[in-house]
Image: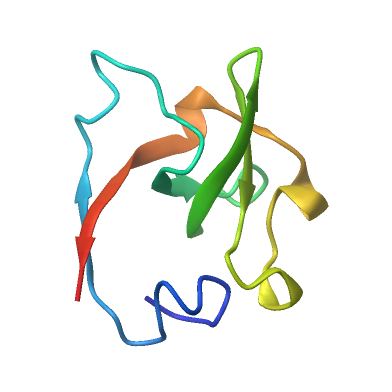
Length: 90
């Protein structure tokens, strides 16, 4: 984990485990923390919380909003941008 966008939940240097199969049989839910590809920079990955869902578009936001580049900047992302669910962190 880099950056301060998910503080206090996640801090710089924290490690996370991702389940890339989490959404094969179910859909992402509000409150889930996910790993997602940036919608305009496909080589950049983000860890954000799902704030809302609308027609298979997911509004992602950092827990530390003043420090976060998220859907307030790049808008909601489609399901295919979501790589997996954060299942644990340490």
